[in-house]
Every structure is written in C-alpha cells, then in structure tokens.
Amino acid sequence: MSWIVILLIVAFFVWRMKPTKGIRTMSTIEVKALTKDKSKQFVDVRTPGEYQGRHVKEFKNIPLNDLGNRLDELDKNKETYVICQSGMRSARAAGILKKQGFTEVINVKGGMSAWQ
Image 1 (cartoon, rainbow, N blue to C red):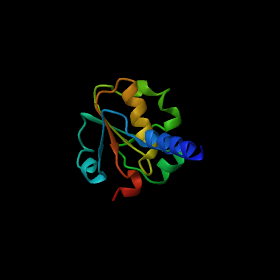
Image 2: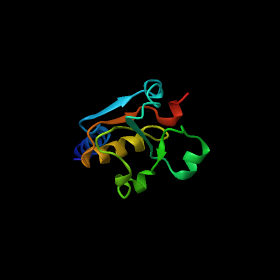
Image 3: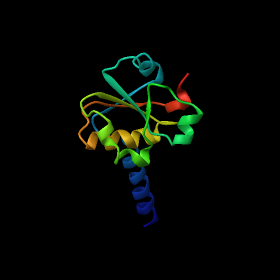
Image 4: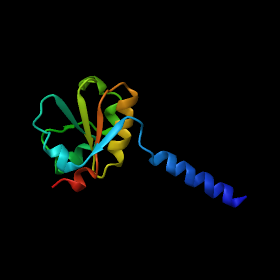
C-alpha cells in the first residue's frame, strides 16, 4: 500500500515538472543575442526587489503574482521571452501566458543565475 502512495507522489511531481505544450526554452546566450529586436517582448517575473538588484534592461518586470492582472501590458502576438532567477517561476509564467492565448512563449533556461 505504501508503494502506491510513493508512486502517486512521484507521478505528481513528474507531472508538475513537465513543460506546458507549445513552450520552447532557450539558453541565456541565445536570448542575449535577441534582446535588441523590437519585434519581441521580454518579461522578468521576479519580485521588484530581485529585479532592482540585478536585471537586463530589455526585460520588463511583471512579478509572477501580478502577471494575471497585467496581461494587457503585453502583446499576445509577439514572441514573449520569460525569465526569473532560476527558470522555475518563468516556466509557470510561460504556462500562464500560453493558456491566455500568447502564440510564441519562450522560457529562458537557467534564468538570471545563468545570465553572463
């Protein structure tokens, strides 16, 4: 009986870690080369304090907790690059954006921790 509970817990975590369908990931090196492209939009979903401490100027700060209320600040038809500190919150944010009808959503792999 206990192995069933363990299996269910493992399955739950695997399901939660699975990326949302239709969301691509890119390395910080790849994204850095695109930041001057005005046809794309860049969103940093970290807290204002984290953003203030260190950020990339092309990324607009919309904290993950505020994202649902601030979708009107973003264009659903532009490629949207999402970053956080490590890639976990941005993956959640990318899922939210995709479910809200954003066509091209890219999660920045490794987040600001990987940004050189």
